[in-house]
Length: 306
Image (tube, rainbow, N blue to C red):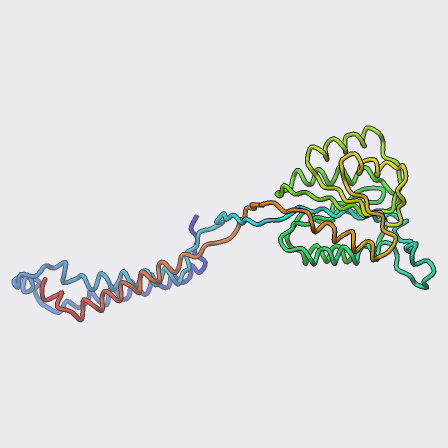
């Protein structure tokens, strides 16, 4: 669909052309057109410069009106991963990290997790990142996006509120649903930051394991002060071939995030809509070309040969 970005110029142009046409046709220059015909010259060639002039002005006016193709669909291709960060915001994440208990005003678990997550996001280039947070329930803080500045703002706010206990099963289901709806890359990464050891119902656990294997999701469980014991979330990690990294200090959490960088990317093609393609250069160049042709005609022997 073609639209005009500056339609007022079109109206002004119509008025201008009307006045110009009236002025041009009001003066003939000869009392009888037969005097011209008597010389054996075609009336068409006599009026050709005038026709070219009007056409050139009309094209330039259309160019000023800025015609555009509306909602041009374009595709962008790049190598990337789809990464969903799942961050535990249960009350236990408000506690100080075990390694910093002897330090006065030591960092809270959520503060360390937030800092390292921000550093991880800043290192990404084309990767699409989404954010989920959970406590008793799971909340979709932001869908998969390449706008890393926006997702960084979301992560930077983590820790200002907490949401009760720890429901470890629901975040997995929410993340898989988001991968299905919004995922583009074949390389899917789920980064799970938690200190929780809450049980997961057996039916939900089996469903999570089956679907994550089918979807080929790479799972990284960054356990903040979480010991490798016989708990349900570690069983999920083991059975799908995921990676559990126990982090007792900020340095270990940094190393855990760095390990994810070694995962291969895959080709992603996304559809970019809503852009308008400018058409005015076509009309402006065409109008200027006609004026150039008109100049050549008026300064050549063309009319004398007609």
